[in-house]
Length: 637
Image (cartoon, rainbow, N blue to C red; front, top):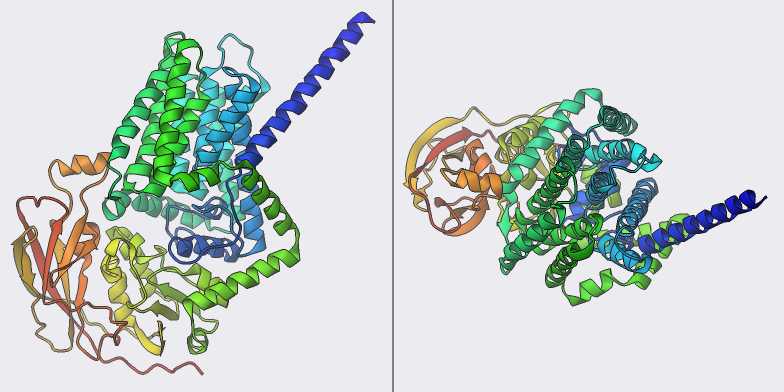
């Protein structure tokens, strides 16, 4: 009888402990809720975010119709989190974010309870979850750290046995969400499974990851034949990003020092002499990989938003690794460094809002009410459509000219416009011109425009109202695409800020050599006139890529940005596609009328890089492409 009573008391205490733990996890997740609103924004990055939502709702094919770092599940966790365009997509995204939030809160709370009392553990977990932008990667790191820091003498628990399966599911989803994020999880998993080797865990992880990715691929309506193109072109996007998009915003130089301090504290915390050699080395390697992944995300495009990712995610590192006795000062120092750096980047107002538990909890509750109420959802959708119409001012004539025909929008994807107006969107294969920054991506996108699957219409915004990213020239970012548009599309409608082009027969002849010129870096060359008065002029620039030691700099971080000066006015240049043939001039009457002309028409051009110029010379190969007069295309009724 006494034994039975004792067992009931123990069981009751365990149940109470489970309830308290669950309540703490829920409190941390809600207090650090990351989604402020389901209302979409307008312009900027919202162009591609909305296109991912459109692609998910309409079943566009990745690897064929779209090539990007984000994949068919990319809508689940974009830069801005879940947003309401279509209810099914928004609901899935919200549920995924909520699941990851709860799992991360619970995992960090479990990790911190090994070193801190409950109240302190919950507070630090809430801080880390609130400030960590890349939650799926942070969750994967936390699970790996828990495996490598568990007591090797303790019996294997059910949670430990579930680890390879859970991480496999997370990896499979991430590979279809954002390809480099999935690759990061694979790297973390490999380090962990090597440091704590169990053959069953390796097989369980690999099999679960492959099965999850395969199920997600099929469930989103993707074709098996597109798996390799998705991986191949996704790798192109990742590899070409540093040279095409890398930059350092003014006033961010101090973040190098802050990053080094954080890295040193993290590695010192991981190097625990009380652990076995294999586990100690594994934990250090795990932290090193996590640091490198965060460094690449933050410092290739070194601006506040990306830098916040590094310092926010590193908070998770200091929370996930147990710190006892004197080592606790390393963890607290790392937390303080991360918070101070994040504060310096985000500012006091943004920091206060992010760490406001009441505002976060209210936002979560408001979103639950919104998703549960068709009337609320419809009202927000109607409000968003009205805002899009007011900002983009697409005239009725433009809408009629497009109709229900497949349409590509330029120079941004403008997925929000397609969604609001009910267009049959067929975006540029690279999503937007600035993302077609390798020859393979440029060629793939141009081939689509030259094929029978090309969109029947292209809708463009004028240069007067379009601000390109980093002062790029949209037609120079994807030169083969620009030429394909000039060759195969004719204007049928023009109204204020918009122009509509209709697909027609190819009016371009084969290119002919026009001359070769060389010049030092930064030196100007004159643009020759075409021999044929009805020919466009292109230039292929050779030698503008990284050279010598700069190749090592490009591998570790990023090369120096390149620029092209058009009659002395500098614009950013993507060196990788500069050899594809930049469209310089098109004869009057054969180009589209201003402000929609595709060719800038400079008299001189010069190419250089930021900072000092290297030695050697650049080669400019000029060509002319004969153009026939545009055949008539029936205008929309």
